[in-house]
Amino acid sequence: MDETMVAQVRRFNRVVTQQVGALNDHFLARDRPLGESRLLWEIGDGRDVRSLRAALDLDSGYVSRLLRSLEAAGLVTTERGAEDRRVTLARLTPAGRAEKRLLDERSDDLATQLLDALDGRQRDRLVAAMADVERLLTAATVRFAVTDPDDPVAQHCLRAYAAELDVRFDGGFSLDRGIRADAADLRPPAGLLLVAMLHTTPVGCGVLLFHGAGPAHLKRMWVDASARGLGLGRRLLAELERHAAEAGAPAVRLETNAALTEAIALYRSAGYAEVPAFNAEPYAHHWFEKPLLRQ
Image 1 (cartoon, rainbow, N blue to C red):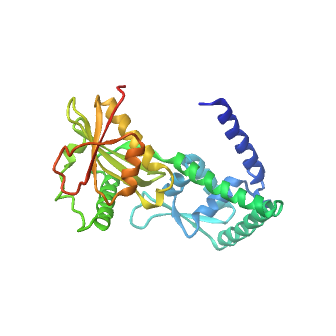
Image 2 (image 1 turned 90 degrees about the vertical axis):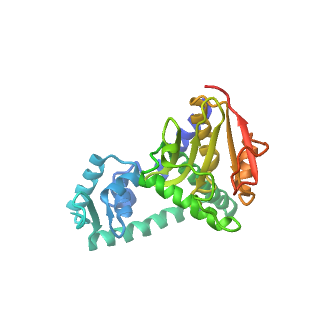
Image 3 (image 1 turned 120 degrees about the vertical axis):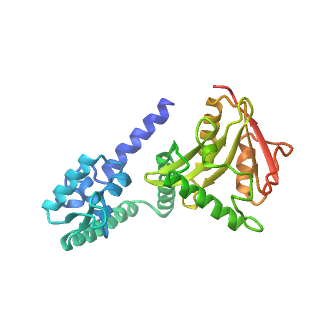
């Protein structure tokens, strides 16, 4: 990694932590640090502790300590779930809800003070840059994992993929009508299903089918609408290509429908060339192939 880029990220982190008050044990002039205040805000109308840990990328021991401190202050209560005793639910007390309202007001004041120090053009630049940084940091948070096709996360992705194509394709879409890829085809060594996760939320997937020494076949590539604009499609495609190369495939092949103009543009920009039809997929109008560098 470029040392100048790393140094810039570190400078940015130092400026932000100072500006938002993360260095102060009395965040926003209250009697708690930023970590406790952020957890209080995330609890909102009530939330299970497991999802809190996932949303904030914190370990269970640290979250437990924060919750105990907030409970001791009379701001939060915790209880076991009625239907699943393994689940712990955190809720704000009336005092906790009042504290959250105060934190919201003071956070608004802090943001206003920051913007007030700039002229109109500078404000526009800062807000636009912050939005860009937010998108990029969110993109950097996405993780990829090879997932069993029977896993509920994988099933969610495949259903969402089929539902979107059913809306976008003339005449709809059905997995049963196209060239099938059963669960056994999506498990190594026959193939794999790659899922993109943003914290605990699945936001994309793609399938590879392996054919011995021949090209790998890419199918079922999907990115959730909530994650578009993050460059996730290109990252997902590159990750699938990496897995194909590691499996020894000399190339990746895929077919796609003319309605998927964004996907077609992505494939072409990523180095895929249009080739004659190599299968009888009824939903396909275009067939592409890209040679891979051997690992």
